[in-house]
Length: 152
Image 1 (cartoon, rainbow, N blue to C red):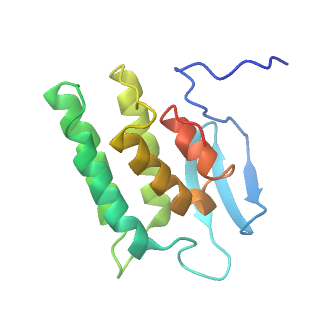
Image 2 (image 1 turned 135 degrees about the vertical axis):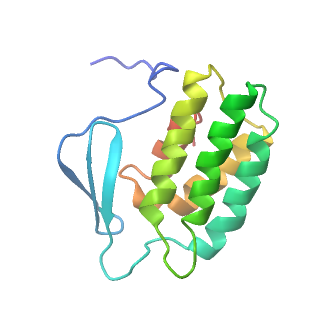
C-alpha cells in the first residue's frame, strides 16, 4: 500500500464493488466503481435538507460561469449544475440525482483540465454543498470534496 495522495486524475474516486452501508445515517448506497446508482434512505424520502441545499447549488452554478474553460465546457457544467438544482424540487426531491450531477460536474471539469483552486469562491461553494450532501455518499463530505480535488 502506498501512502501517497490520489493523483489529480483520480480526484479521490473510490471504487467499491457492490453495496455499501453509510453507518452514520443507515442509508444504503448502491453503485459500481465510482458511480452511485441509487441511495436508499431509511425513514425519510430525503436524507438531506434540500431546502438548504438549493441556494448553495445556485451559487455553485453562478461560480461555474467564471471558470476559464471553453464556452461548450461551461455550458455542459452549468447544465449539469442546473439539473442538480432542479432535483431539489420540493414536490419530488431527488437527492441521488443531485449527488450524481455533482460528480458529473467534477468529471467534466477534470476532462477540461480545470482544477478547483482551494480557497476560491467555487471551492467554498463545493465545500458547503459537500457538508449538506454528505449523508448521501459513502465517505461523506470528504469524498464529495475530493471529486473536485479539494480536501476537508
